[in-house]
Amino acid sequence: MNVKQSLKPVLCTLCALLLAGCATKTDLENVQNQAYRDRQESRKTIQRLEEDLSKSQEALRDEIQKSTSPVQARQANTWAELESLRVQVAKMQEKLDTLTMKFNAMTTSQDGAPTLADLNRDVVNIKTALESQFGMDLSSGGTSAPAVTTTTEKGKTGTKIEVSKAAPKEKEAEQPKLDTADALYAKADASFKAKKYEEARQYYSEFATTFKKHANTSSAIFWVGESAYNLQDYGKAVLAYQEVIEKYKSSPKYKAAILKQGMAFYKIGKDKAGKAVLQDLIERFPTAPESTRAKQFIKEHK
Image (cartoon, rainbow, N blue to C red; front, side):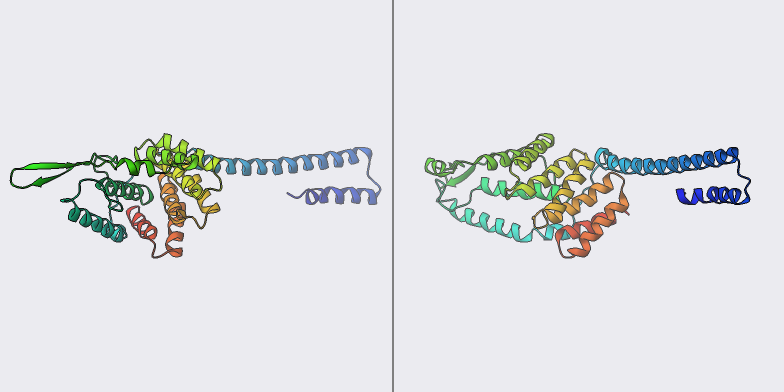
């Protein structure tokens, strides 16, 4: 209630008494006391409304930051998502064909020739990106690169020639040393691929804090969110994705951050918010693989 409006009847009464010439000291005191009580009640009402608003805002903030309700992630392996990898798979097949043609004559690694270890590393990297960025489960018994040994039969005697996967010493000497930023980022990547998500989150956070203008800063923040997501700490994941969305609109992780934020909202029971985020992604980037995944996710959670 407006304070001026509450005092208006009191003032009218006081004026009437004064005009009538019948206002006594007691009447004046009663009017003053009533006005004081009205002002106090108005202040209490305003204070109570401000406290209720503050509590509501705090509750919403806590709900996003602290909610870690664990929900088992569902497997999604749709044709549209796999079709987006067609070009990459074709390139890998070309590398395999090249290796097959050179195996019989190969005794050491040749300049420019891909190795099985390289191909295996490419597969692991693609698999890790799919599992995290698209919420897919492609587990087939671990992500670490297996040892690679290739043998070739010679003649009819059954003699086999073992081809070492190790590069020549000359190549090892030519490899440049990683700088501090690249070394830290590589360490974070290794921890994530090994599914040591808490350790990976710490390394990615350290990278993003230390190298704020690095080309990989936005990606590091995104992977902080991914680490939290895999730890089922969905509230912290939402906040990390939001930082990418707000600060790095040109980042290659921008669309993936929107997708995973929408999925994370579902995980904390905010289905309406999650659906709104995913619908926005679909409308803005209708042909993106992330939008295809968003459509599939919405169908799965109807």
